[in-house]
Figure 1 (cartoon, helix red, strand yellow):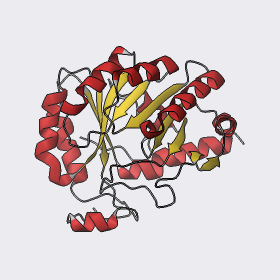
Figure 2 (tube, rainbow, N blue to C red):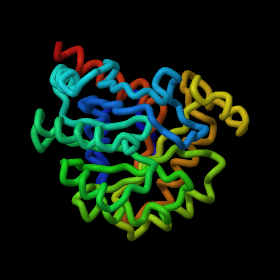
Figure 3 (cartoon, rainbow, N blue to C red):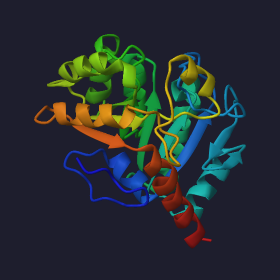
Figure 4 (cartoon, rainbow, N blue to C red):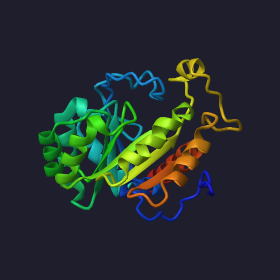
Amino acid sequence: MQLQMATEIAPPEQGEAEGCIQCQMGSKLVLFVTGKCHWGCDYCPLSDNRRETPDMFANERRCSNFEEVIEEGKAMRATGTGITGGDPMLDFDKTVLAIRELKKAFGNDHHIHCYTSIPIKPDQAKELGKAGLDELRFHLLDLSLERYSESVNAAHEAGITVGIELPAEPDKEEKLMDLLKELDDSVVEFLNLNELEITVGNQGNMDVRGFNLAGGITAAAEGSAELAIKLKEAADGMSFHVKFCTANFKDAGQLRNRFRRRGEAT
């Protein structure tokens, strides 16, 4: 498998999530809707100034209202928005309002994806779909679909494209291989594997688990890329698409493309 170059915008793979396609182009507004999260994942890369904050950030801009969020989206000619946190579902009403405001400002073609680690209730999935959410990415805390199956099915029934997004943890190979079998023939349409990164926010925890930097200028954990590639190959022919996003591309490609787009528009 050939890895994507750090600054390369690769052609979309068959079955790749629309949110990923737009994100690679740098055309997605990143809306950090809340820093609230009660899971305490040891690999969380979030910086201290974002943890538990109620503040919103549109890209790097702190926003006190949705008018400012829309202004930032227009400034970069955003084709879509990725809603992140924290966990957006811990401020559910604010997240639903964000989806509605973005759709009202940019139209129904403005693609919105959102992340959560929470097994949301069916009525919440219905409300998200009604508001206009296009894509929901579940972060499975126990690397199993079991406790999320009702939420996943409810989101699918609400017209939302459902995916899973996880870091490729080098010491979780067996569980991740089992997860592939769970996802096969489910309504899940894609699995995104992110290269595990060692950051200022998680370095102590990564040291405890024995993870080292892969080397070079990357923040990637040694062994993460190799596992992600193995998982992608193992999922060949299954009912869902597997995408591997490298730490280098996130830092030098995706971010640079977004900055360039923002600069060209001002």
